[in-house]
Length: 189
View 1 (cartoon, rainbow, N blue to C red):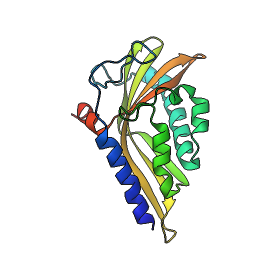
View 2: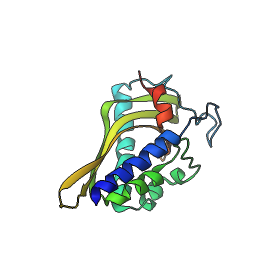
View 3: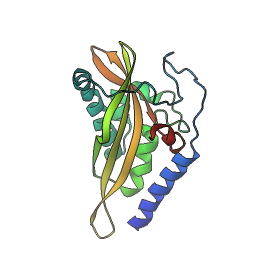
Protein backbone atom coordinates (compact mmCIF):
# COMPACT_ATOMS: atom_id res chain seq x y z
CA UNK A 1 0.00 0.00 0.00
CA UNK A 2 1.48 3.35 -1.06
CA UNK A 3 0.37 5.17 2.10
CA UNK A 4 2.71 2.88 4.04
CA UNK A 5 5.45 3.85 1.59
CA UNK A 6 4.93 7.50 2.41
CA UNK A 7 5.27 6.75 6.10
CA UNK A 8 8.39 4.67 5.41
CA UNK A 9 10.01 7.58 3.57
CA UNK A 10 8.93 10.08 6.21
CA UNK A 11 10.02 7.83 9.07
CA UNK A 12 13.41 7.22 7.47
CA UNK A 13 13.85 10.95 6.98
CA UNK A 14 12.85 11.74 10.54
CA UNK A 15 15.14 9.05 11.93
CA UNK A 16 18.01 10.34 9.79
CA UNK A 17 17.46 13.98 10.61
CA UNK A 18 16.79 13.59 14.33
CA UNK A 19 19.68 11.19 14.86
CA UNK A 20 22.12 13.69 13.40
CA UNK A 21 24.00 15.91 15.75
CA UNK A 22 26.47 18.56 14.74
CA UNK A 23 30.13 18.26 15.51
CA UNK A 24 30.90 21.62 17.08
CA UNK A 25 34.55 21.33 16.23
CA UNK A 26 35.97 22.84 13.10
CA UNK A 27 37.39 19.69 11.60
CA UNK A 28 39.06 20.52 8.29
CA UNK A 29 37.96 18.69 5.17
CA UNK A 30 39.86 18.48 1.91
CA UNK A 31 39.90 22.26 1.78
CA UNK A 32 41.53 23.92 4.79
CA UNK A 33 39.03 26.78 4.74
CA UNK A 34 35.92 24.53 4.91
CA UNK A 35 34.58 23.03 8.11
CA UNK A 36 31.85 20.50 8.84
CA UNK A 37 30.32 22.68 11.56
CA UNK A 38 27.61 24.86 10.05
CA UNK A 39 27.20 28.50 10.94
CA UNK A 40 25.06 31.24 9.42
CA UNK A 41 27.56 33.97 10.17
CA UNK A 42 28.99 35.52 7.08
CA UNK A 43 26.17 34.48 4.72
CA UNK A 44 24.76 37.44 2.82
CA UNK A 45 22.33 37.98 -0.05
CA UNK A 46 24.25 38.06 -3.30
CA UNK A 47 24.47 41.13 -5.46
CA UNK A 48 22.93 40.70 -8.95
CA UNK A 49 26.28 39.91 -10.58
CA UNK A 50 27.06 37.18 -8.04
CA UNK A 51 23.54 35.77 -8.36
CA UNK A 52 23.90 35.48 -12.14
CA UNK A 53 27.36 33.93 -11.82
CA UNK A 54 26.34 31.26 -9.28
CA UNK A 55 22.79 30.33 -10.31
CA UNK A 56 23.84 28.10 -13.27
CA UNK A 57 25.90 25.94 -10.90
CA UNK A 58 22.94 25.59 -8.55
CA UNK A 59 20.59 24.70 -11.42
CA UNK A 60 23.05 22.09 -12.68
CA UNK A 61 23.50 20.47 -9.26
CA UNK A 62 19.75 20.31 -8.56
CA UNK A 63 19.04 18.98 -12.06
CA UNK A 64 21.38 16.05 -11.55
CA UNK A 65 20.13 15.51 -7.97
CA UNK A 66 16.54 15.33 -9.24
CA UNK A 67 17.52 12.97 -12.08
CA UNK A 68 19.32 10.71 -9.59
CA UNK A 69 16.16 10.40 -7.48
CA UNK A 70 13.86 9.83 -10.47
CA UNK A 71 16.12 7.24 -12.13
CA UNK A 72 17.38 5.71 -8.88
CA UNK A 73 20.90 6.12 -10.22
CA UNK A 74 23.46 8.20 -8.32
CA UNK A 75 26.20 7.49 -10.88
CA UNK A 76 25.35 10.32 -13.30
CA UNK A 77 25.34 12.87 -10.47
CA UNK A 78 28.71 11.53 -9.34
CA UNK A 79 29.98 11.62 -12.93
CA UNK A 80 29.17 15.34 -13.05
CA UNK A 81 30.34 16.02 -9.49
CA UNK A 82 32.91 13.31 -8.65
CA UNK A 83 34.01 14.98 -5.42
CA UNK A 84 30.55 14.33 -3.91
CA UNK A 85 31.26 10.62 -3.57
CA UNK A 86 34.14 11.38 -1.19
CA UNK A 87 34.04 12.13 2.53
CA UNK A 88 30.38 11.09 2.95
CA UNK A 89 29.21 11.66 6.52
CA UNK A 90 25.47 11.08 6.98
CA UNK A 91 25.57 12.12 10.63
CA UNK A 92 26.81 15.56 9.58
CA UNK A 93 24.77 15.64 6.35
CA UNK A 94 27.95 15.82 4.25
CA UNK A 95 27.58 14.62 0.64
CA UNK A 96 24.39 12.72 1.52
CA UNK A 97 22.99 12.51 -2.01
CA UNK A 98 23.10 8.71 -2.14
CA UNK A 99 20.98 8.55 1.04
CA UNK A 100 18.50 11.04 -0.44
CA UNK A 101 18.19 8.99 -3.64
CA UNK A 102 17.72 5.72 -1.75
CA UNK A 103 15.25 7.30 0.67
CA UNK A 104 12.71 8.11 -2.06
CA UNK A 105 12.81 4.77 -3.88
CA UNK A 106 9.97 3.05 -2.01
CA UNK A 107 7.61 5.50 -3.75
CA UNK A 108 9.03 4.85 -7.23
CA UNK A 109 9.04 8.54 -8.20
CA UNK A 110 8.78 9.27 -11.91
CA UNK A 111 8.89 13.06 -11.94
CA UNK A 112 9.85 15.87 -9.64
CA UNK A 113 10.66 19.51 -9.11
CA UNK A 114 13.19 21.29 -6.99
CA UNK A 115 12.68 24.93 -6.11
CA UNK A 116 16.00 26.15 -4.67
CA UNK A 117 14.64 29.53 -3.57
CA UNK A 118 11.15 28.49 -2.48
CA UNK A 119 11.54 29.83 1.07
CA UNK A 120 14.16 32.51 0.56
CA UNK A 121 16.78 33.76 -1.87
CA UNK A 122 20.05 31.88 -1.61
CA UNK A 123 22.81 33.43 0.49
CA UNK A 124 26.55 33.34 -0.09
CA UNK A 125 29.76 33.38 1.90
CA UNK A 126 32.98 33.82 -0.04
CA UNK A 127 35.88 31.81 1.30
CA UNK A 128 38.24 33.32 -1.25
CA UNK A 129 38.12 34.31 -4.92
CA UNK A 130 38.05 30.65 -5.97
CA UNK A 131 35.61 29.21 -3.39
CA UNK A 132 32.16 30.12 -2.14
CA UNK A 133 29.55 28.59 0.14
CA UNK A 134 25.91 28.93 -0.88
CA UNK A 135 23.08 28.47 1.64
CA UNK A 136 19.97 27.24 -0.15
CA UNK A 137 16.55 27.05 1.54
CA UNK A 138 14.16 25.40 -0.87
CA UNK A 139 11.65 22.66 -1.53
CA UNK A 140 11.85 19.41 -3.45
CA UNK A 141 8.82 17.36 -4.46
CA UNK A 142 8.74 14.04 -6.28
CA UNK A 143 5.67 12.71 -8.09
CA UNK A 144 4.55 9.11 -7.73
CA UNK A 145 1.37 7.05 -8.23
CA UNK A 146 -0.64 5.75 -5.28
CA UNK A 147 -2.51 2.42 -5.26
CA UNK A 148 -5.40 4.05 -7.18
CA UNK A 149 -3.10 5.50 -9.86
CA UNK A 150 -3.63 8.94 -8.36
CA UNK A 151 -0.73 11.38 -8.76
CA UNK A 152 0.84 12.28 -5.41
CA UNK A 153 3.82 14.38 -4.34
CA UNK A 154 6.29 13.62 -1.60
CA UNK A 155 9.19 15.67 -0.34
CA UNK A 156 9.42 18.99 1.37
CA UNK A 157 11.58 21.75 2.73
CA UNK A 158 15.36 21.49 2.78
CA UNK A 159 18.34 23.62 3.72
CA UNK A 160 21.72 22.80 2.27
CA UNK A 161 25.06 24.51 2.03
CA UNK A 162 26.65 23.95 -1.37
CA UNK A 163 30.42 24.41 -1.56
CA UNK A 164 31.55 25.64 -4.97
CA UNK A 165 34.94 26.29 -6.48
CA UNK A 166 36.16 27.50 -9.83
CA UNK A 167 36.96 24.64 -12.20
CA UNK A 168 37.52 25.12 -15.94
CA UNK A 169 36.50 28.79 -15.59
CA UNK A 170 33.09 28.07 -14.05
CA UNK A 171 31.58 27.50 -10.62
CA UNK A 172 31.18 23.80 -9.73
CA UNK A 173 29.74 22.10 -6.62
CA UNK A 174 32.38 20.01 -4.87
CA UNK A 175 30.74 19.38 -1.48
CA UNK A 176 27.27 19.54 0.03
CA UNK A 177 26.18 19.87 3.64
CA UNK A 178 22.49 19.17 4.29
CA UNK A 179 21.31 20.99 7.37
CA UNK A 180 20.21 18.29 9.82
CA UNK A 181 17.36 18.75 12.30
CA UNK A 182 19.86 19.28 15.09
CA UNK A 183 21.61 21.99 13.07
CA UNK A 184 18.32 23.51 11.85
CA UNK A 185 18.01 25.81 14.87
CA UNK A 186 21.27 27.51 13.91
CA UNK A 187 19.72 28.52 10.59
CA UNK A 188 16.34 29.65 11.97
CA UNK A 189 15.70 33.22 13.07
